[in-house]
Image (cartoon, rainbow, N blue to C red; front, side, top):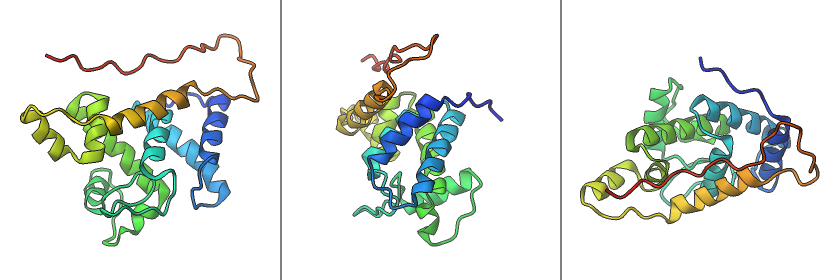
Length: 193
């Protein structure tokens, strides 16, 4: 198993503050557990947890019980058919009903796994995010057809991501020594070839 990074209490507090601005529809104690879970799951796949927070806030505004017109379910708005395939890939037990997707831990685990699979497939975060939104088959068709991939969705997620990375804890302006306050470099654009 991969080594997880040491937990940074400042970062955890910041993420809890971000989450507290949303109505999750879950017990408040769950919200704290969710932050720890998102951090751990993200890092297993090499993602910054703030990216996953940004994706969840874009998808469902963190409301656990949300269901879209297209039938996408839960925090990371997973289509049940996709969820079933992802559950198989991650060895998560799946029951015919979509109940599993209302379990935020299952939903987020599957969602992060899915984003990672799309990132591996397309080799580029922007494209992976577009595929998360439109579905990989559509994106593949557009790429093959030389069509421009819509960027609005990816831009929205990446803007939230940047702002979550940048947001420090206002009540605590003291930065511990040896802490870099620089924002990490943003994801490079894929060069047009």
